[in-house]
Image (tube, rainbow, N blue to C red):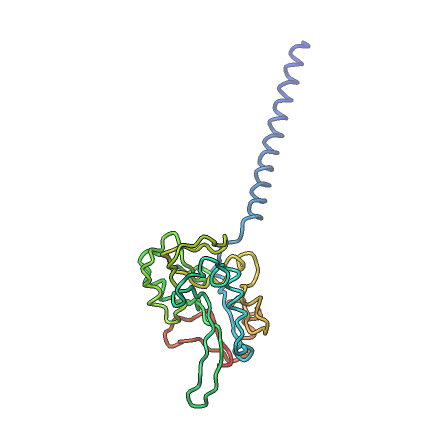
Length: 249
């Protein structure tokens, strides 16, 4: 009798223990998954369209804050020791300042020129390997792993926003991989955008001429500003619908 009672108690304990395990184990799994989701960066979403607005009235002659910020952030130009021996005409140029002049009045404006992150990017259309690509949120990038350096994209870009790496590079930054024989351009500081920060050029613009935000969100600061001011798309006639807008020109 004592033996049978002991056996029943043992079975009851095992059942309860198994039940507890069944309850606890899924809980642990769910907690782990929940934690993993929390740590996982949110992927690009087509609900957003990242873009910039440049107020050229605030761009001062000779200012290159945006260029220096991009170089330091992404490790090209003055941010790269390897490029010191490069041919000046072959140096990387993720962003540059250009001066436009009204032929009739002689009035000039300076503005930053970089990848315009077009909705219909010509660089993506001509890329034979798919290295040139557009994310769901509108940021146009180059996959360095499959770029073969054919430079079709450079020829297709009407903004001359891409450059080719001619020399071996040993001082790359982890957030901006670069490599000899590949094409590169402004990434809109995608590594910063994905963690909720602004592109370096916008953050370092001392005159506040550059604004970054979600063009799809009517309540974003950039959308409100675009609704308020007259803005221009460079080469709007091409129908590329750039994500970079300019006001004051």
